[in-house]
Length: 301
Length: 292
Image (cartoon, rainbow over all chains, first blue to last red; front, side, top):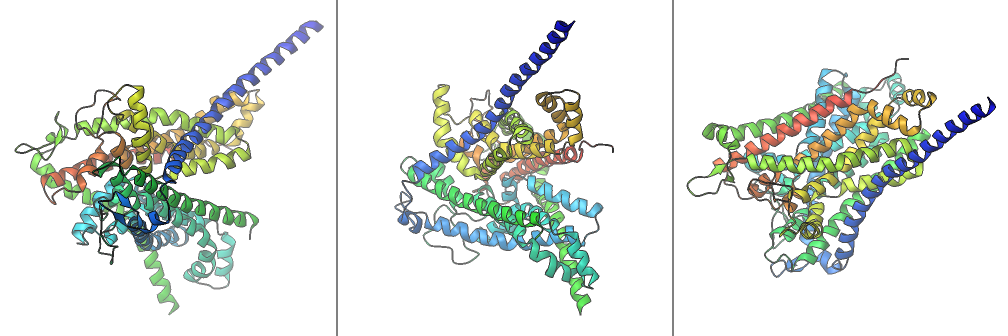
């Protein structure tokens, strides 16, 4: 009798430990998938950093390309990307924040807000090359901007709009309801509440979303292919109607379209590294900003 | 005075909301209105004929999108075969097993991967992955559907991981507690309870990853070789719909048949991704619940 119980107890225990070792193997198998993700990212970053770093120096960053783009730097591409992202901000931020304020502060939640939110999500899923087609048909041709900074900036603005709306709405939602109710109770109108109570507290979150959107826009190539990016320009753009050189487009050109591809490979690596650093810095600052303000929200400050 | 400001601000904000709907509808409208002349001139048939995309051919240009549709399908399918199992496994680990510091470590890595511009990924595929593939399979060129599928899978991974993790986290903890209380191990709980409960959300994550894969342009443009011939295997060069548009968009003659044909391709791409995203959207709304 006793031994049987013991035996049984032993059996159960054995089963459990068997499961535990199965579990350990399983958990490690799952953990390995994340190491794979880390590995993939590591290989990409290592390759580009190790080969790009040799090329980057002060001259590379501040000089225009020379000798049919086989020598010199990428200064005009950096400037072009900077200009076009400025226009992207000017387009996407007011609209995106406005829509988010509408959704979160003004609207009665119902069919219309559902439709707006659905549009935001679907706009986020539109392929970037379709934005390119749209930009070409509307901004370049219909509005007659021609291939230009403004046409490309607006196209990229449309593309980043969903990011801005979603992030801004999330930021607005973190402002406690009691703040609004308190101000309403003191007789403030809705706009006064939004302007003086809600927006100031939501600014860090909105900024985070804006930077994330920018990082996306700065790295996009397909939407600017036919809306304003140029192969090579002898001078910097001087108005919003000028064409421009851009980092991602420059990388594309230097790695696939240039007449001496293997000769300009180092320049392509340098361009890739500059672009990668730019995008990573933007993302990093957004992440840090978000962390700081989430902590603040958590502390209830 | 105050009420005028109030009214104006209200109108401004409503217009911003309305603008989003108008933009989405506008994209559809522009695609339709610019592809219509082409569809009227040629009819629907030539776009799906067993032919090649050759709009520049002297005398008899052809506008068949068929091979590009095959190309898109191959790259997308290949990407999903690679990205869905890895993505879901990684999400399950992050949501159910990872310790807080592991999450702190891995989540930013996933975010950084999501931030790598597609053109940089394409460049990597072109200069590093393509020679490797060429050597491994003894090919003249590594610019194949296989190469595109891997890189597009890498692009889709962060989307799948993040959304699948959200879906798994959203499963009410009562489900887990019940399973553990009945003597289930953590492993059993994950595979028999949590993941099945989060199934619709996980499917949605795969679909959104698929949406990204279908629309991905620069990476495939740079790494799949862009041949318009009908692909026979994953080791053939393919041209996808998105890359097909990107190749021609630069020097197409405005309002030519070729121009309208590009919009037909764009419309097709838009409709497919729209449907995929809509389906994902419906799936995401279906969350497991608990009756209390």
